[in-house]
Length: 495
Image (cartoon, rainbow, N blue to C red; front, side, top):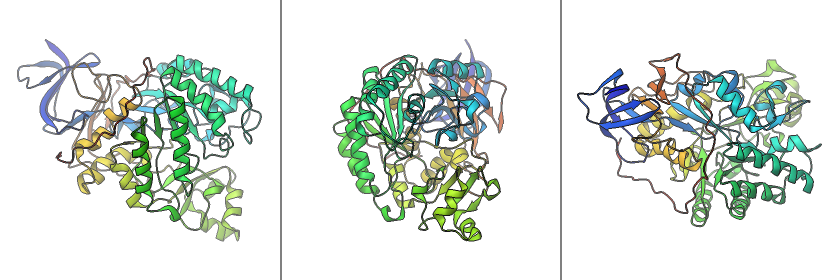
């Protein structure tokens, strides 16, 4: 038999968290068909891995690439990190099911302009993704704020019973059409007035359909633990698995709180299916939020509609130049975007290393001066935190961005290197691996990602995108399974 693609002499990290093993991997069509020592095998294309690491393609569970996978289907920022699948629709904001006739509300404006919100149904969006033929796979959540934008005349109040019913109907249709579940962004001003009573019936719809609920918590600052309890209760009553988005202890007064937050997560995990995602940086990035404006941390403006010339400048410098208090300067800059240096390194490392956490970039591809996580998050975990700091074994780091992610989001036959799985694969040189994006130069491809295979086709090879865009929309067709146990990492693993 002549295989389509044969990768020889690879150190295979299969995504399970087990140590690597030496093997050849053969691909026929879209799937892996053989693994082992195959010295006599032949293939149309043969790649000698030269004992580099071969892992499942990385799954970015927290992205805001909703419109970019259609407008910019090459998705270079993802491929250069070894990412083969993105989950879009996070933090309560999604491109569907949404049509807009007026200004894009905050923070939906992170996804694009008015013309980008043209998908009245989830099916319309999914078909548009398939038509664009992106380089990577796409799976999508439905955003709670996006649902609000379709049925409410004002965000500054709870939804009425009729409005909740209308949102539930739209959500149910989207779930039937393949959406993974529901996301919320309860900390944002256009969702913060939604009480638990508004969320409960929507999350119950997700539970009935077998989806997942992800949430940007109502409070990531002093009220973090209470906000976590609210999320646990909502998910538990809705009988739905929960993912807490970018779990963090934000604000200088809350540094050192990761232990308490993770203990609370572990306690909840004894009774329900809960996980979190995390990005490997101590700064967040979003729209310019007046509630986060303080002189305790560094805040850098990344864009401003009324004052575009102030981009890439510290807010404190702008305020001083204008002879204004920080808050007044921020008001004048809005609508705007910002990077907030509001976390401690020790807290972030605790969350990142925890067995219940997955890796997500939370990158903002439409920001003209994005946070470096957009281009560097996944290589940074592997190279800096696993290889250099030994925060976790390499195999465990890979598990956090492959099999654990696939299981939590119901991505069938993804996230593992095994016979019968889709051939989404990343080949990397651990010694050369480096995230080169930083806050000064955030748009920079990582080094050391040698090859990325998506659905059996080589999408990225030796620093260049190929002409084989073979990604697709991954529609949920099954119930996402739940379990009630904590997966402990194997600390005996070696790179």
